[in-house]
Amino acid sequence: MTDPNLVRFRAAVAGALAHLESRREEVNELNVFPVADGDTGDNMALTLRAVLEELDRLLGSDGDRTIDEIGREEIVQSVARAALLGARGNSGVILSQLIRGAAEELVSRPGQLIDVPLLGAALANAADRAYSSVRDPAEGTILTVAREMAHKIVTDVAHSTENPRLEPATEPREQDVAIAEALESAVAAGQESVKRGPERLAALREAGVVDAGGYGLTIIFAGVVAALRGDEPPELDHHAPARITHPEHSSATYRFCANFAVTGSGLSPGRFIAPLEALGDSVLVVGDETTLKVHLHTDEPERATAVFDGAGEVSRLDVADMRLQVAARDGRLTGEPPAAGNGKRELGLDAGRLRCGAVAVVSGDGLRELFHELGVHTVNGGPTLNPSTYDLLAAIHEVPAEEVIVLANSANVIMAAEHAARLSDKQVLVAPTTSQQAGLAAAVALAHDRSLEENAQALLEAVSRVRTGAVAQAARDDAKGRFSRGEAVGFVEDYVLAWGDPAETLQAVLAALSKAQDGAAAPELISVLAGEGAPIGLGEVEAMAGEDVELELRHGGQTAYWWLLAAE
Image (tube, rainbow, N blue to C red):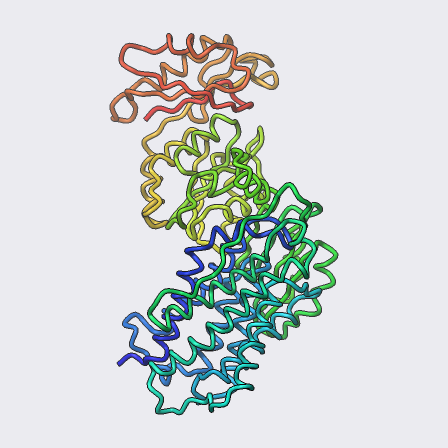
């Protein structure tokens, strides 16, 4: 028989997450402090989702484990750790500390029924824990809202003429009603605190906005009230997004928002703050002796993780490019088209998170647009297709999915992509695509509703059916004397096939790709992607097609190759 208390607790968390998800984008659009990167709603939702997944794990596959079987202390510690490890960004880390503080109060009173006085004490401890986690706490933010919501419950209990304590024999429904009533009062106080935020924090006042994290917290508790009552959540005001033409706080100095976990023994959060602050700002180090969660804004994530060399194992590294996030948010608020590389919004994926997404390393405006048409996020590899590990991590972060395939599109990228996959807190698989045209074939086979493993198999099968070719301008004289610098060089896969005149070289590559190969039928279609400065126009290229093959001609915009070709 399922223990009703644990099931009710899961239902409350699920209600909080569902309500937050329904207003997640509204929370994102309010986000201006400490950086206007537009992801507060996302980060808070990820923290709650981690808690919900941990509760499902504790309940077991059949959902029939009881509190007595699991143990209250294990439940509380597991939930607190899940929130900590699942947290991203300032807002997510602070929310994890609110959850941890509440959990610590609950576990300190074994056997006591959760009633309004205990709830007030738990929220008060939650606020204290969150304040202590921030080096320079700012009033008018989620911290203030949490404190004033807790104060409201404690004050109501103190002024109540009735005994607010519940007895062990109290029916679950009566317990739900009492807690919901107390939380609804706290939500009202939280809403008033949110409205006063601009009076307390200049960054909010100048942007004409309320604090995103504080507003998100009231949404979370309204969702809990709805779950406890089995009814609609309490009404909350809607708030207009920031006036982006007005001054607002930004992290102009640093590019990356880095989050990671450290596990070990004898860990002390305080000893790591100073060396991290030498590398960036917005530093948060929270946790206990065995597990820490670290957040900071920096240009050097690799140096930030190196601070913990010898102290513990770094994992769950998540790196977001704040400059792209800010540009994407500003573009949404002004109605301007987003710049390249702005993640899920540029792909039209705002409706919800995907099961599986993809990142492709690209060079060329046309190729980037082709990948975007296929629902694939891109990272600019430059002319040599050589992004850093942290460029790749930032791109992985932007994909609205917890499972991500990286299309390396160059043999030189695979090692950096595999390193990024190991560091990321998402499930990441690197597809061994060694050219952009092979990457496009793989992207065609991607289905966002399939699992990582299913997509990986489909992508590998698609790539196995593709033969690639290319024509480039020789950068130097050939050591074997076959061609000189500036002449055309044609390849089929990695084999140098032809050289000399651009038209003749391209014609030779097309002819080779048009032939049947290894028992397979000759292709009916060859894709040709023209690069910048190609010496022959697409009309002339089209005339090179033989009678039995059709050419699909597109502008790729790549700088290293005049033409990229693929035959399937």
